[in-house]
Length: 118
Image (tube, rainbow, N blue to C red):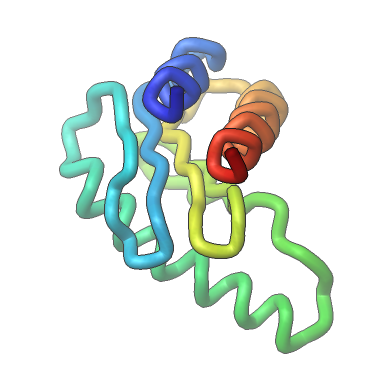
């Protein structure tokens, strides 16, 4: 079921390229899509940055992090927490609708939370 949720996320966003579901150690649980980069390596690297952003946000009492967008020359990466130890990353083209991506990654994170809790 987890793999299907990740696959559905990519196909639900126009301009969706790849997605990866990662645990707290930066290890891939499920991934799909095609990019020219090593998805698992980039996923682990972004997960480290995401953890740092969450820690800083908490330290500054800015509230809960719902998602982080990394904007790059070749496209964007949207990262969202799924549970304390997990996050979901969606790689989208630079022309993709970020709002559409946000709506769909939120839906996918809710589905993954339910799947993890079962």
